[in-house]
Image (tube, rainbow, N blue to C red; front, top):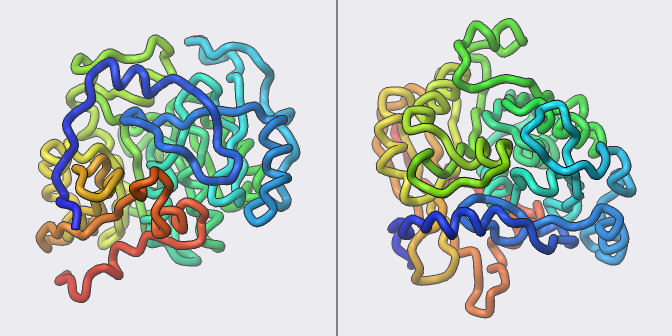
Length: 340
């Protein structure tokens, strides 16, 4: 069994390299994304052609190409400029997501975070930091009848997420709100978000700390990947403020971030389940899913975790089942008894 130890921190060069797009994933299984959590891109027209060949995992009821999204202008720091967008398939083609060609792009982290959300029909879900919407839309697609709300600081990404929701037939299930998670709760109340009003809260927060890594020049990408030294507390405070009593929180982060995360969760969330993700058998964990209950005082528990890759580089059956949307990540089911 792999040990839930953390992987060494990447170098600044590694972090910058992970932000460079490459080739894409036509079969609905995102590639590995490096420590910046960036998925490679592919052309929208090519996506449609390739997805048409992948019969077992081809999408149904989705748009044909990238024409629903704003043109080919380069991504700049101007918030009013359009994003250059490509398309990617997720959940075995159950979702087709437009993503910035050169901005923050979702991959494995987003899919596993959504799979770990224990929502059921009728539940309310809130995501902090929506990006192009893949986490929220994956939850809505996996669990019919959920009401998902997501907050995104970049108005272009929030608009892209709304278009993704409409294009995938989830416009009524997922709502995307322009906002900053560090705002006071009263500002979100004015936008219709009720404090202590959500059954489940989710986040894939920035993995890097400003001043400790070389960051991309692009402003959107930089903001998605890095936070100031005190900003992580703002993310956790936001999640705690909007989770209902006994509601759940689920985060995904680099495994070596655990010493920073645990003190922030203390007094807000308890009964924490730590679920490590290992690139390969025998290697240190690269990611950690942290799941907890608001207001609980139960102790932390470390679960067995999941190995992502076989020795030949392919995905393990368990990982592929989650990536293709055939299986949820049942963290609570891994426990025979958890005190409240």
